[in-house]
Amino acid sequence: MLTEYGFWDIFSGLFGVFVFIAYLVVLFTIIADLFRDTELSGWAKAIWLIFLVFVPFITALVYVIARGKQLAARQRERASIANEYIDDRGGVSAYNPNDEIAKAQGLLRDGTISQAEYDRIQADTYSQ
Image (cartoon, rainbow, N blue to C red; front, side, top):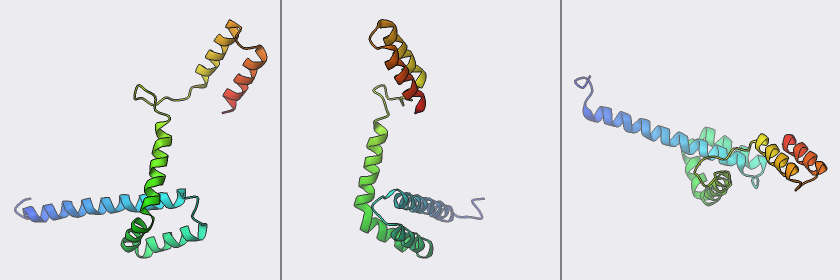
């Protein structure tokens, strides 16, 4: 196989694939940011998308230059929200309604809360 293709042919092919995948990541990041942006009107989002379809490279470059700071701020905000759900042990703390009910039963058994409060906690837990 190396006799048919030289080192630089293989290297340039791999580099081209890398650049293409990096461009797709940027493109999908821009599209996701457009849909998550609440300050941008629907028409502005549609215009950005139309330009991304017809002139993708230049539009992506303009978007990153013009709206890059807002994009980074929104990503930091989403990351901080996601970090709120990670507990101290480094794992993801999943919400388990059965644990909440068990805690409430223990409080009811100890006399810390009344039966009405327990019923309210149980209703709130299962309504989520």
